[in-house]
Image 1 (cartoon, rainbow, N blue to C red):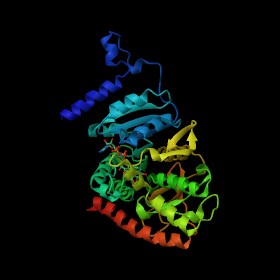
Image 2 (image 1 turned 180 degrees about the vertical axis):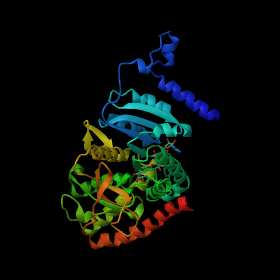
Image 3 (image 1 turned 90 degrees about the vertical axis):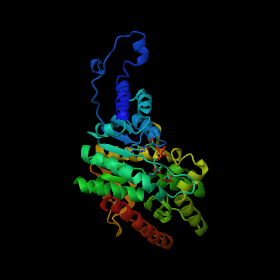
Image 4 (image 1 turned 180 degrees about the horizontal axis):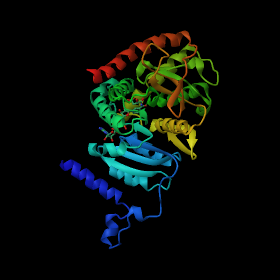
Length: 367
Ligand SMILES: NC(=O)c1ccc[n+]([C@@H]2O[C@H](COP(=O)([O-])OP(=O)(O)OC[C@H]3O[C@@H](n4cnc5c(N)ncnc54)[C@H](O)[C@@H]3O)[C@@H](O)[C@H]2O)c1
Ligand SMILES: O=C(O)C[C@H](O)C(=O)O
C-alpha cells in the first residue's frame, strides 16, 4: 500500500511537470496543463511500452518519441518510469508522453492504446539459455497481457520478452481465455535475427548491409532461428563453409552479446538498424518493427517483415516467416518458399525444438 502511495505521489509530481518544485520554491505561480494552449489530439497512433525503463525500453522510448506516426506515448515500468518519462518528454517532437509506475497504474497505461510493445522482464546472463528466463518472464508476460485483454483488446502487441518462442503462446492463451484473441495482432519480435543476418551476410559478401535482405524463419532461440541463405537478396551463392559459419553465427548472435557483456545484460544496442529510417534517424530493430506495424496501421502498402506469429505454414501453431503488415496486423503470411537441403535439415531441428517451447507456454496458462 505504501508503495502504491509512493507511486501515485511520484507520478502526480511528474504530471505536474509544468510547475516543477524548483519553480514552486521561487514563488512562480502554477500553470496547469489544461490552461496551456496546446490542445493535443495530433493525428497519429497511441503506443504503450511496458518495461520502458529497461535496457531496451529506454532507447525504444526515445525512438518511439521520434516517430512521427506516434501521437501519444505511454511509458510503463515497475521502477524508474518517472525519470525516463520526464527525460523523454522534453524532446521537441510531436508525441505526448505520459508515465505510469507499478501495477496500480497498468490499466491507465493501456487504455486506448493502438500498439503495445512489451520488453518487460529479465535478460540473460552468461551460461543461461533464453528458456532459463521462462520462470520469471512467463508470469510477467501473463500479467501484462491480462491488462491488454482488459484495457485495449484490439491493440497490436509486439512481444519482445524472452523466451519469445514461449511468451507468444502464453499471450495467445491469455487472450483466448479473455475472449479477445486475434492471432493477426499478436507478433513476436524477431527483427534482430534479420538485422544480424543482414550484417553477417554482408560482411561475408563484402557488400553494404543495407543492400542485403535475409529471410529468417522459425523462432527466436538457437536452432529455431533459421536463416534462409538460399533466398538472400541480392541473389548470392555461398560455399558450404560460409553457410555453416553464417548459420551458426546468426543462431548464436544473442549469446555472443550476452557473453561479451559478461553479466551486464543482453542485446540492446545491437538492435540498432540503419536501413529503414524515419525522420533521418536510426531505428532499433524493435523500433523498426513497431514502425512497420504503425505504417501498416496507417494503411501503407507492401510492409513486409519477419515475425513469430500464429501460422499454418507448418504443422506448428506459431512460426516466424515473412508477413505483410496492415490495418489488422499480420494480414498475410507468406510461405517459406523453396529450401536448400541444408535448410530442410535445419527446419526439422527448428520445428522439434519449437514444438516443446510452444507447448511449455501453452501449458503455463492451461495448467
Ligand atoms: N526479442 C528480441 O529480439 C529480444 C532482444 C533483446 C532482449 N530481449 C528480451 O527483452 C527482455 C528485456 O531485456 P532488457 O535488456 O531490456 O532487460 P532490462 O532488465 O534492462 O529491462 C527490463 C525492464 O523490465 C521491467 N520489468 C520487470 N518486471 C516488469 C513488470 N511486471 N512490468 C513492467 N516492467 C517490468 C524492469 O523493471 C526493467 O526496467 C528480456 O527478456 C530479453 O531477453 C528480446
Ligand atoms: O540473446 C538474448 O538473450 C537476447 C535476445 O534474444 C537476442 O537475440 O539478442
